[in-house]
Image (cartoon, rainbow, N blue to C red; front, side, top):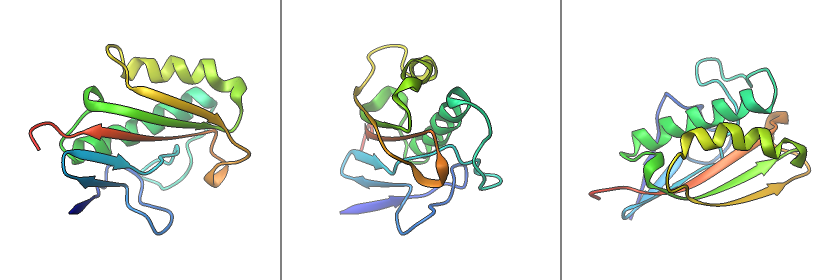
Length: 128
């Protein structure tokens, strides 16, 4: 059985998908880009500013599902430019200070709405 997760504290989906789906004790998030949930607009700034907004959006989705960064087991990061890898790590590392999840990072030709970064996560939901 799957349960759709939605929160107004993260951007609305810009297509036919859910912010996240829970099945059993696992949560699968959609990829998040740096959209401000209040305005629906891409945040301005460099990769660090966009990565910060992405992580805030993901935190909102995780919270809505009853979990947190502590329970994330896998992330996938998509970068528009691999030259942004170090700056991304600077932001990302603040959210995973101990026992970070497994991660894959890919450089891609383009991301939705001209984003510089998109991140998706798989997390365990404790006490599920």
